[in-house]
Amino acid sequence: MCGLLLVAWIATASCSGDTCSGGRNMSAPHLDGDIFTDADTPAVRISWSQGTGHGAGLPDTYFAQVSAGEYGDDTDLVGSVRFMAPRSVIVQLKPAFAERIKSKFAVTFTLEFPDRRSSIRCYHRGMSDRYILKVEMTFNGQGRLTSSDLKEYEFLGPI
Image (cartoon, rainbow, N blue to C red; front, side, top):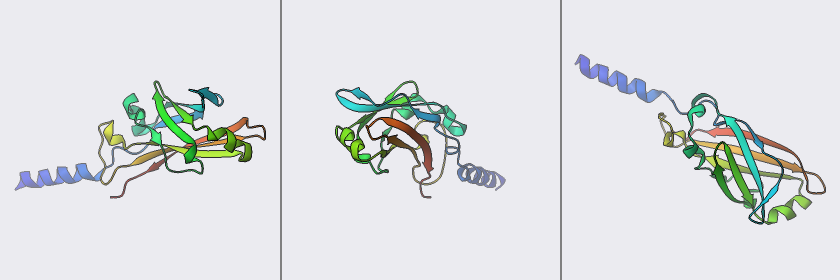
C-alpha cells in the first residue's frame, strides 16, 4: 500500500510542473542589416543571441523548424523562411513587398517556432505551445528601412 501511494505521489508531482516554458527562445532578436536581394527577391536576415531559462538549451534543429506565422498585417508578403546556423534565419519576401512599402510605411509579419518538447527534454500538460517572433519594419517615403522592432511571444497550449 505504501509503495502504491509513493508511485501515485511521484506521478502527480511530475505531471504538475511545466519544465518547457519560461525564458526566451532568443535574446536580442534583430534585423541583421538592411533589406537585401536573395534569388532575385527581397529578403531580410534576422539574428539573435542565446535564449534564456528553458530556451537557452534549444539546439539548432529546433530553430530549423521555423515557419511563416499567421499573425500580422503583412503575412502575405512572406515567401519562405530558412534557418542559417548559428542563430539566424533568412526571410525571403515576395516581389509584392517592394510595391507595398511604397504606399504603406510599416510592414508586420510573424515567424512561428514549435513547442519545445520536440527539441529539449521537458514536460508540460496540454496541447502544444507556440513561440511567435513578431517583426515590425518601418520605411520612409523612399522605401528605405528606418527602424525595426522584434518581440517574442509565448502562447501556451490549452490544457
